[in-house]
Length: 164
Ligand code: FES
Image (cartoon, rainbow, N blue to C red; front, side, top):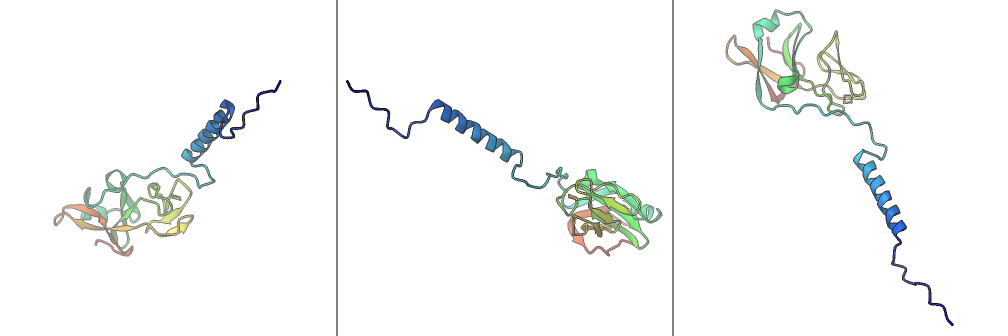
C-alpha cells in the first residue's frame, strides 16, 4: 500500500509563515513611521512664517528710544523679532537656519536655538553650530510717518540694513 505523496506545492504558505511575515512588515512599518534608520533627531516644527507686510505695535520713535539690544517678540505674529542696536532698527527671523526650529527670545548678547544648541548674535550672525548660516533679516518701514512699524517677511534685506 502506498502512502500519499507529500505536498509538493512550494507556493503554499503556512499560517505561521503568514503571521511572521505580517509581524515583520508591521515592525518595519512602525520603524519607518517613527523615523527609524538612524536619522537625526526630529526638530519641533516652527510656526509657519506669515508672508507679506505685518503690522507691529511699535513705532520708530518709541523703539529708537530704547536701549541698544532691545528685542520685541513678534514670533506669534510672523515668527520674527524687531530689534534695536546702536545703528537703528531691524527685523530678523526667529527661524533657525539649521532645521527650522523657532529660536528663543534674544537674551543678553545671544539668541539660542533650543533644538540642537545653535547660537546667534543679536545681528543674527551664527556663532555656534550646528547652524552655519545667519538669521535672515526683513525690511522694516513705518506704516505712515510717525506710525507703527511694518515688517515685510516676504522681503529680505542685507543684515546691515537699519531703519533710522
Ligand atoms: S534647528 Fe537645529 S540648532 Fe536650531
